[in-house]
View 1 (spheres, helix red, strand yellow):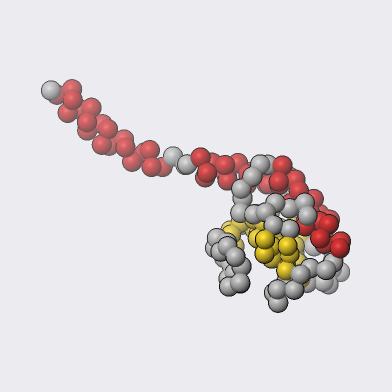
View 2 (cartoon, rainbow, N blue to C red):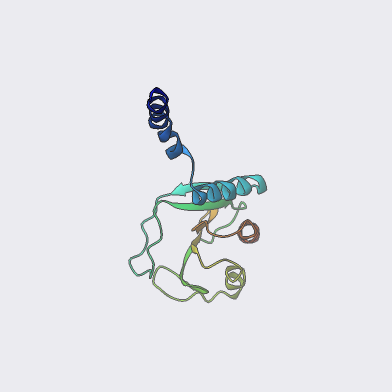
Length: 145
C-alpha cells in the first residue's frame, strides 16, 4: 500500500512538468525561427491592427520577418494578401506593379502582408509550412531591399 501512495505522490508532483513541454506546433515554429536566424533573417512578434476587410483575421501579434533596406530606398508601400495570389493596398486596390507581383507569386498563401518603409522591408507570415518557405521569403526580402 505504501508503494502506491509513494507512486501517486510522485505522479502528482511530476505531472506539471508535462505542461512545460512544448507542443508539436510550438516546436515546429521554434525550428522555423532558428532556421530563419541561421540564414540571417530578423524575426519578431509584432502587434498589428489588421484591416477590417480582410476575409480571415490574422493573428496579433504576428510573426514579422524583416531585413534592412539599402540606403536611398524611398518607396514606402504595404500590400495585404486578400486571398491567395491577390495583393491589395490599404484602399483595396489590386497591386499593378508587375515586378512586385512576380516576387509575391512565390510567397505562400499564409503570408498576410508585405510592407516596406525607408528603413526596412517586412513580411508578416503565419509560420505554417516547411523551411523551404523561408528561402522564398529570404529571396523576396533580398530582392526588394
